[in-house]
Length: 152
Image (cartoon, helix red, strand yellow):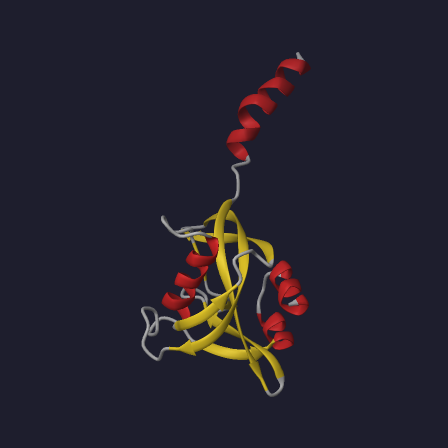
């Protein structure tokens, strides 16, 4: 009888309860300054916590292209040189509202910012600021993103 329960768990119930993680892309926007490398952080729209620009994949764009599009929409990155391969990945639980969340794995692409715009789609919804790598790592919540920022 126990064999029947194990088979039911492995074949039917476990896959339903353990959904695969959703995928996002993020841009680690940076620039050189007199004090070293600086990282651009933005606030999230819902909680106001510090994050990097990120979002869902976009049809017709590769991961780097989608990350750059998110950097434009969320942070006003007008021009940047982006590395086409991810420099790291981090996981977090995306709040979907009404007490629901979904696990997300986020690929991070480095983007050296050459120009910012004062006017961009989410300018009224977010705050953006440049921070040292160490300060940026201290400000974000996700442990794996902290590690990426420190190692960058």
